[in-house]
Image (cartoon, rainbow, N blue to C red):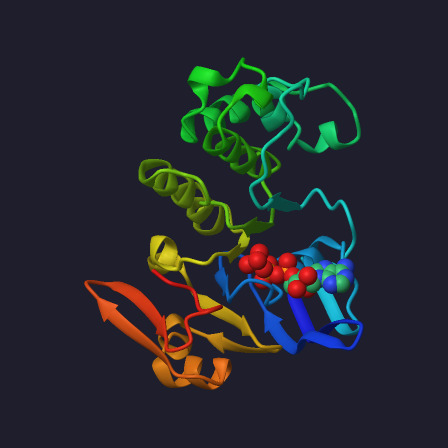
Amino acid sequence: MRLDSATVRFGARTLWSDVNLSLDRGEFLAVLGPNGAGKSTFLKVLLGLQRLNSGTAQVLGKPVRRGSHQVGYIPQHHQLELETPLRAKDLVAMGLEGHKYGIPWVSRRSRARIDELIDQVGAAEYAQRPVGLLSGGEQQRLRAAQALAGNPGLLLCDEPLHSLDLNHQRAITELIRSQAVDRGAAVVFVTHEINPVIKHVDRVLYFARGDHRMGTVQDVMRSEVLSELYQSPVEVIEHKGRLVVMGEHSEGVHHD
Ligand SMILES: Nc1ncnc2c1ncn2[C@@H]1O[C@H](COP(=O)(O)OP(=O)(O)OP(=O)(O)O)[C@@H](O)[C@H]1O
């Protein structure tokens, strides 16, 4: 995926501007920043749901378009309606290409892949239950499986670990990593918390105050760099392999 001089404005507000980024297959990009900095909007651009005010966006070598089956998306957590007329397994199957076009045909191979994913996210025990009755974390694990079912070349994740316990955070992180490393997907991972994925991250894109910084974890997650970005003192401390980000004005700075 590739962005050139990409800019999004809402009215007089420039959300972010002049983002230049080329992400290859197999690469893992973490997108960080405070609430409202424009992280989800960044994903929407790549999904073809938000147009750029200037610049260009490409996904897998082609201009961005809505509904590409090569793009997997784990949306930000929201609870499904109690009456949603789907079983857990159906929700995962909807991630298959054919299902997007309403074709109810699923090959033996696809069925095996769905069962495998359901196992990998630890959903086997509730695979036949109505999704509306499941907990937030259980639903979130199904969304991850759904996004992976179509074997996407670009995987977009919006805080996918939100509402998951530690064991399931690890399982989902491992699945996402494997989609990048073993299946050659580019991964864009929006998160408030870099530590659970830090060892998989190739690059960081950090949005704040209409500006951004990009580079390796070592390049970006530094006191000088983030203080300059936030325009206020921010301290990044490394403790036992974890990064703790502390801001003097803590509002809007993510905490560990
Ligand atoms: N269509 C729109 N029109 C006007 N403003 C919008 C629109 N979409 C988003 N915004 C605003 O742009 C800002 C960025 O929103 P976005 O959801 O991208 O932030 P975020 O970094 O993902 O935040 P969070 O961490 O809270 O999820 C917010 O202030 C939001 O209200």
